[in-house]
Length: 98
Image 1 (cartoon, helix red, strand yellow):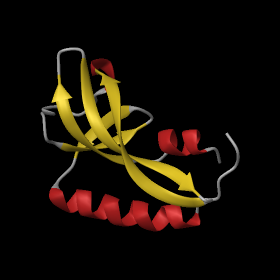
Image 2 (cartoon, one colour):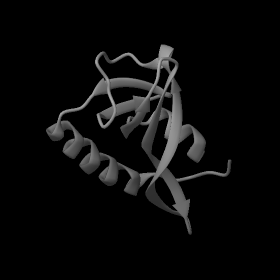
Image 3 (cartoon, rainbow, N blue to C red):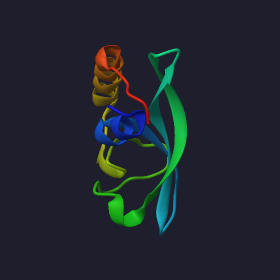
């Protein structure tokens, strides 16, 4: 699976950095492959307002991101589970060239 597709397809953890009337800027988990090993880093992404499906999102909220859509505001417990299972799941990912 190409890394670009993996990052779109997986449900990723994000933090809303700045909301506006038109978009949200978020720091989102991003899987990179260094020496063929998966690693999680943070990356800023811009999500258009029309792609924010969760209500009441504000600066500082932790959210679930899927296919460049903000799907849900997360509770602290949900954040811990998503961190845990994402870290576990990427151990089994094999990457193919872009």
